[in-house]
Image 1 (cartoon, rainbow, N blue to C red):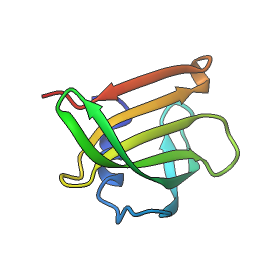
Image 2 (spheres, helix red, strand yellow):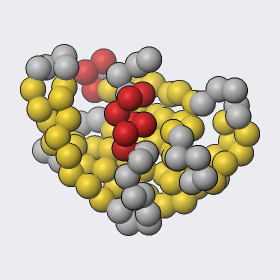
Image 3 (cartoon, rainbow, N blue to C red):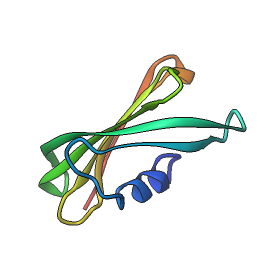
Length: 103
């Protein structure tokens, strides 16, 4: 499990809908401090991953405090499972991380 899995599974249970937004506190374990994050549902997307093609909510998490970095994730509308995510990590020189649900 990576640092995104558990928190994204929790966020996938929220009442996601077109235009839904939320500001929440997130513990940055590396910095040992709370950060404010903003979640925005960007819309509906059809995404193809290893488990097939699904209709999903596309959502993005950014800093509500203006810090760099983004995390985009897709939540299957029928199962509410996170099927894919893409993160840009400024603390790692702008490296990106991609993951998708496997069968």
